[in-house]
Length: 316
Image (tube, rainbow, N blue to C red; front, side):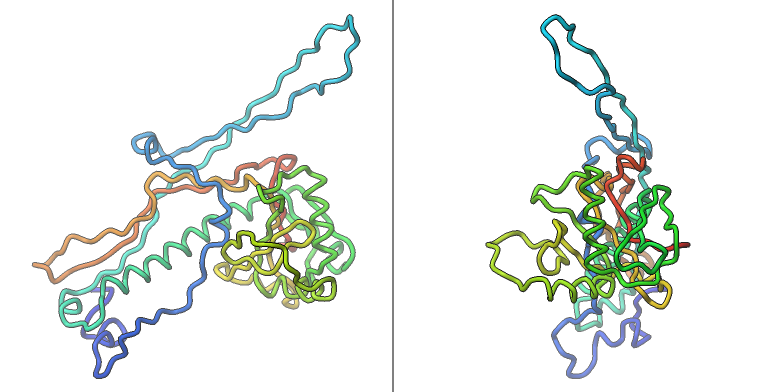
């Protein structure tokens, strides 16, 4: 059987050995960055037996802006439009089978170890799904001509205009912050925008900021998973390592996402759960799985209403 067995050391036999340490150790795992910035919608009470599509309404501004009235002027009338976004619910899951012999002879808790491994796997699966929707944003930005350290170019077709060949710096961040504000992208409840990228992507920015200010006491505030340092230009920075580097030209920078509130919809019909396999072969064939029914979808697909700006490169 594929999975964990007693007869192969690396597949289970090592779970019992002479003088084996009692401390459980796992491979290093990244945690949630993209998923924690999705807008979760609970469909558990209405998602079953309702098909695989979930929808939401997007309401426009009014068509005609209000204006000054004179005493005898009739009150103007206007309207607004409603569009719908949609996403699809999918099954997610993975499993680890194991033998009854391994379970019976192992000194270490087989189920506990498998549960933790599957939890890490589920996290990576959902991070990948959430990041794919962040990537789909129509707003892309890169250093102008691919090399400018003082200017950026914004496109609205989700594709960068040139190949990025320069490290992101604090000036790029300032200009992206200006774009977020100029486009009226809403901030989070703490009054800040957010940014997610790999640690090396933000290295030059962090080095730049060390020369701008030292960390000072700002009072107690919530620190979210993966947040580094203090906000700059109204942006809070988060590092992620789940999504592999895209190896841009000369290893200069990598993908990063700057965004405000209302980013990606996460529709939850069946939240992630651990399921045990019904034992087979008279109890000798066992297994554990994680399972979920969820869907992720970009909340605003039209450039004028987009909430996410991605730091991009040509052909990325």
